[in-house]
Amino acid sequence: MEKVPMTAGGYQALDDELKRLKTVERPSVIAAIAEAREHGDLSENAEYHAAKERQGWIEGQIAEIEDKLARAQVIDVSKLSGTQVKFGATVSLVDEDTEEEARYQIVGEHEADVKGGRISISSPIARAIIGKEVGDVVEVNTPGGVRSYEVVKVEWI
Image 1 (cartoon, rainbow, N blue to C red):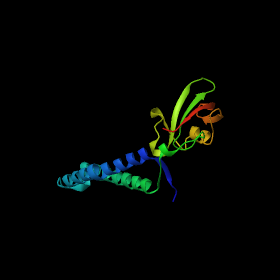
Image 2 (cartoon, rainbow, N blue to C red):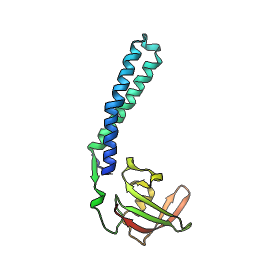
Image 3 (tube, rainbow, N blue to C red):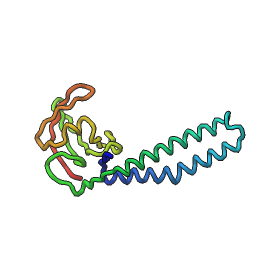
């Protein structure tokens, strides 16, 4: 069973979502199914079929989140340090062509939010910079072609 690395914040967010699905969404859809059943013939009851479909989606989400939480390897970023880029690090990069600076924290796959400055450990940029230090230059294959980035700062926030 493969471990799923995540930050403590990512674990908490998943746990909160699981609780919401179980305590709010699941009872709501069960009530909707019961109400739709009261309307008679189930074979032609669109509300019933929509509610059953939603129930299937909710149960799938619950199972997926429970699986991730069971395999979670929670990494406390506040206890990490060092000059080398690894999971949890917040890294500042400079694009060697455009001189644009970008700042990303390397997080678990379900926590990724590029606009929020969090990239997945499995993303091309993260894979390229893992193990690097300040001053190192990496080449990353992107959809727009190969880009070169210099690691200018490694932080543990």
